[in-house]
Length: 216
Image 1 (spheres, rainbow, N blue to C red):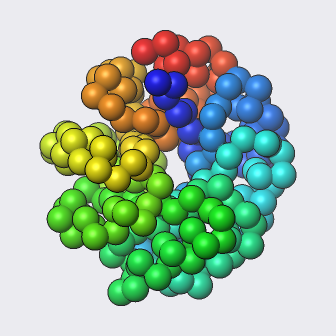
Image 2: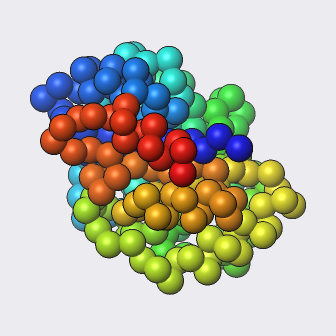
């Protein structure tokens, strides 16, 4: 199984966003991950539709968005109109989350849910037939550079076990390291979001780093 390696574009050099996309594309990135934050749902703000449009315009690889916003029903339409490949939403961001997931799917976009460390599987189980992707957060959403939360590993194991009943892909986001990629790929995780701790370094040798992770 080929693992899906997704650079987290909130960690990129925004003085040279187009060049960053080109470098990552040539280095073998599988997908571009875009965090959208409104300063309300999480205490940070990141990536505008214009940033995402720039990323999408400069690659033929899939682009996903992770909506960390309070008015997800409204914001979602912006990224549907941009024809994004995958849209992740947080189940706790709306009282009618299933309606939003169905709207994403009807638009021909892969729907996904992002599960924060404090959200249990039991609270989202009814949504699982509606999604193509689950992104498990291994840090609290909102900021890069955090520490991996080991207690989330039990949740990861449980989601891997029930995946066969639904067919979704499992992605991991938050403080990803070599060891985590190696261990959790073997367990059955499909892909990883790579941020400051895994990919974005001063030397920008993205090809070497991605090739290393590919072999793990």
